[in-house]
Length: 183
Image 1 (cartoon, one colour):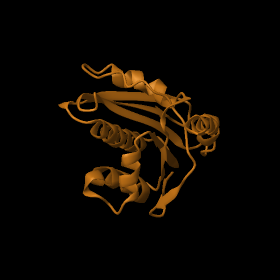
Image 2 (cartoon, one colour):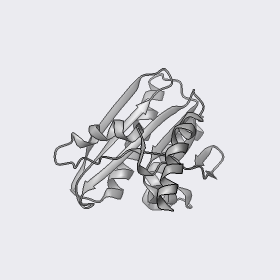
Image 3 (cartoon, helix red, strand yellow):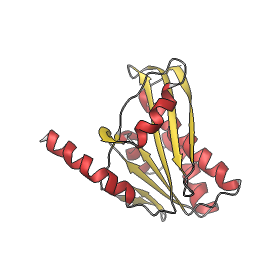
Image 4 (cartoon, one colour):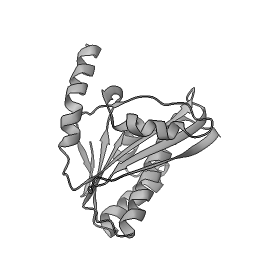
């Protein structure tokens, strides 16, 4: 049964990613820590509507966990997008693609203090800048290329393990607020 699900996810991923409005910015995020608990880092790949890309990466800490690395990638991605928007890049929507289920669950919650900074950045993009924000969960290691293109960026950080992995998509959605979608 698991192999059938993986095959189904592989088949859905390109179609799901292609289903987003072409005017939206696609952001692939990833983070990992060696053995899940140390030497962590993050990587980001942003595909802008004009066809250009931006990569960013950085260390998270010697003693950290994979979740903290995933969260750092998410927050840094939103900061990068917001900064670029304020510098003149027109944004109508942003899709943040992450393989961190626990982050997506916390974002769906009622404003957990654990994800407060992320929610503040989402709110700033939505309310102040009038940009639609969508968070799409993509299971890792399933076979499409978004995160595999940015993971080497994360892996270049000193002491950061190569997170490896590729991504795929699911189709469950849950709106949060008026213009954010958690998918």
